[in-house]
Length: 366
Image 1 (cartoon, rainbow, N blue to C red):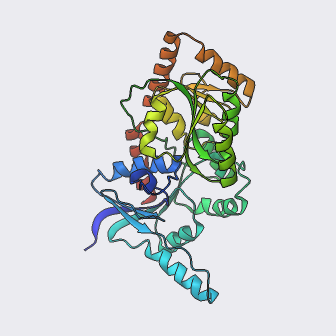
Image 2: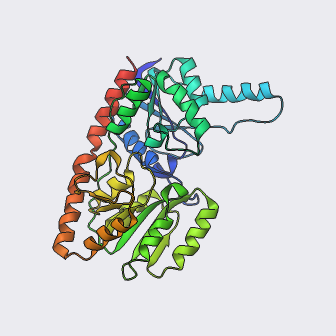
């Protein structure tokens, strides 16, 4: 018999790397997976919600049902392959609850079309500014398909006022704001080094961190990578990092080990070209680690200098700001570390994020 629960379908192929990492599988995840793991953990504790994750991997987490996405068939007679692929994708949406909705954070137009056809309310969350402001030039065809779908979603979720304004100006979409959240850890680290965290990908510009490290030969620098997206870049990066005496590079670090790296860092450096939900900023802040960003300042979180500073693209300014902090006395460092912690604790609240999503779900199911 159909119960009165709501099934939340989530398309997130790499979520298992955060919720249930496998020791023999190299980690590959980003801020979107981290954010969704926090939401799903919270939903699993509530009465009235059932969580189903579409994934390309098998993993286990209490309260979450995993449905593995089958690779598309591309052989044989084309219309038969297409029929089988559509049938497999439609099967992902089987549910036995009174209500269902599809939460899209990783856009897949095939799954989106099926959700539309089945009449399942669909929510799309804007992960990064580049999805809607034209700054991503590597996925133009995919972005064009996303932009066609945007007005059709029941609700589009923005993560910053900037995204809200873009959605209103370009598509006439009134997007609710859902701020990201961060899991708090009671860690008191022995702060020793300058930290960089990210994928080995051009978007993150890790070579600029190594360039910065050369300017501080007496200061330990640590580069922590979660995955390699571009193998040629990854190999060159490893070789260059290992040739710099004050740089330590640690590859393929699982999410559960990240808090210790943040907690033991004196400062966190961002060289990324873009940030959506600034999970790395939040994780650094909640560990009491001030942020020094070359370019990105998502939602203006660095405007008042409490969490950290943004050099607005000037590498010399970035180096000067970092040097001033590193050469300051212990009292100044402690004050800035405490300020970063307080900012993160109040700005990225898990209860606020959960309540915001529950309001979004109620709106989509109307």
